Amino acid sequence: MENRRITTKSEMAYYAIKEAIFNTEFKPGERIVIRKVAEQIGTSDIPVREALNKLESENLVEIEPHVGFRVKKVSDRNTFEKLEVKYELEAIAIRKTAENILDSEIQEAEKKLKALEKLGGKKNYIEYFAGIREFNLMLYKAGRNETLYELLVPLFQSTNVLGTIYILVPGWCKHSVEKHREILEAVKARDGDKAYELMRQFKFEGLKRALEKMSENGIVENMEQEWADQRSKYIVGIDVRA
Image (cartoon, rainbow, N blue to C red; front, side, top):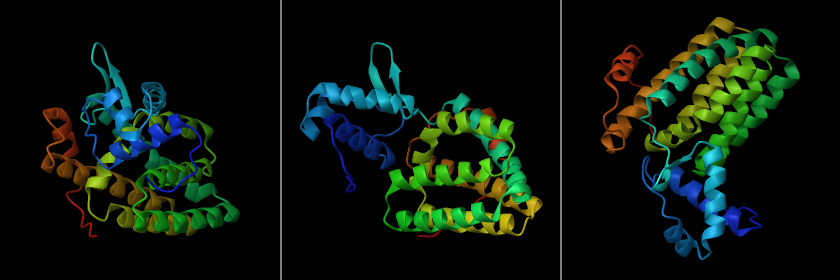
């Protein structure tokens, strides 16, 4: 685990399981055996169960009746439908941001992006994906459309598990920072149309590449044909290098 101040056994279990999910040691759909995890980290079952309940609230795990906890599946049709809506709304939101953001908010965004670049280089995936989510929501809030922002917040939460798939793409964190820097430059130039196009292209290109890597790693099984047909409309491939 990354160095961080952990004060309880429940927190220790939470970060251990979360890192295992983000590092794909626990694959989507895989059952998490509480007793086994407890033995591995040297604690009782109770802190592990508490940790899993917290991870369930973050949409990273789910409870299956008569089975127990599993890593939330990323091939669930409802999740991808939400993700598609989220990406379209993000593109609209960043256009609003370019129109309404304050200079002080741009300066704060630049600071956060520099911090994210350091996290990505250290492969601190938990902190990186939490940080990029915070960075984006900060930008969307600066668009000053409360209705749009209130629609996006729960969509970020309900699609949280999708963050794990981007780890499979080599060099993703570096690529993500570079693309967000391009988007921020368009925002700084108050070019809403360019920011919109860059955001939408980045989101759907990235998803297509991540889905390809998931298939290569045997994580996606029986992906619904209609989603496969739908995503085929989006821009093909991106060149992501380590």
